[in-house]
Image (tube, rainbow over the protein chains, first blue to last red):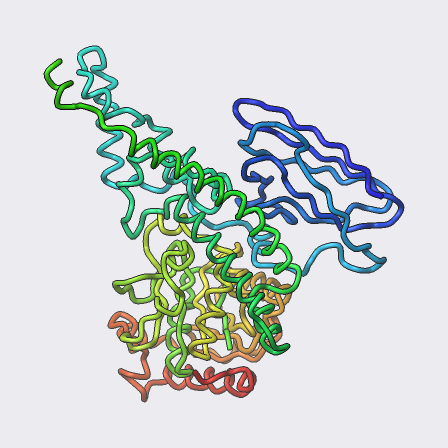
Length: 279
Length: 226
């Protein structure tokens, strides 16, 4: 029986989870699923989740003698047991502990050639906003309240936000409402703009769901073989199926929050015309 | 069949070889140089869009160009926006639709060079006789070995010097085809055409034809007609 020790602590609005798994005399593959109410922010290598990590947790091998230590972050509060550990098969001597190279392994081994963020010029609209913000800061004492609201959120770091939505940070965008402001939502759409994190997340979920549906629909052995190959093999398919379980939880949470927001919108009808008289 | 045209060093003629080879093989050329694309640009979705999940790989293939082409975007923001590990699935999707894919790989030895080799059934290494180009060709050849992309031919570009052929053959462990330095190739490339469409009688065109025949001979069974 694999022994599990876990710890979750909250720091600066992020929960840091550590897991220590101690072997039971045989090398055993295990599945570690996040149980906190939020996305997994896994450790990364070259911008990609480190080997074994996916959107709902980790899968790897606990050595026969020794331990496996893991750590990840999540925006969810540290309430309850942070992970569920499921022992899987025993890994025999000589059997590789991990799958063969995947495209992600190649990226991690050779390095991501994407240009550094600092080298990417701001689109014209962002430069203009940055300029506005700078000007507004320079003469802040004389700014009108309207000026202030126009430049709200226009600090340099927040202007950089859209560029932090590349795949390297995709998983961190799984709580879309925490990242995307309405301002950015209406500004997007240019062909060269990175996809917004909400759309990118939904697209990834959709791809996983389509894969799981194809796996589910495969009736004949040749079809199953084709579908499995398209899905990246048996292990990748297992990971996808598990990831969709986490997707479902998040989708329901987002749907619930969206419904509540929509209800609040429906319940609000401010009398702006009356307020205008106050100016 | 997926064929990676690679070389390690920049400026040795990888794009020219990839474009002309795809023309002879009647395949699709994928401009895999995410940061410095140099095959003909076109309107519509490109590889950056595909890797960012904004476009379907097959829908991004342009058939109205002289050689069917999956072009690459030319902005740094675009080069950052995509998920590079989707590259393999992308070229495989194009292969399923079109049968033959030639990937024009970038210079260097990073993942954008490794992934075409990972996806490819085989590769062609392009080099010039310069020492620095040969050193990079050896490095990329090693990477191709690690990633199981067999080396079909070495293209010794911009030379008609047969004296170098033997040493390069020995160095890289594969037969060499020379492509002479020919203005017709540069003129055709500038016009967005493969040289076989503009000067089919030139020596360079015959070299590309020999290269395509070698690929066909050695990888013929893996070529699928769409």
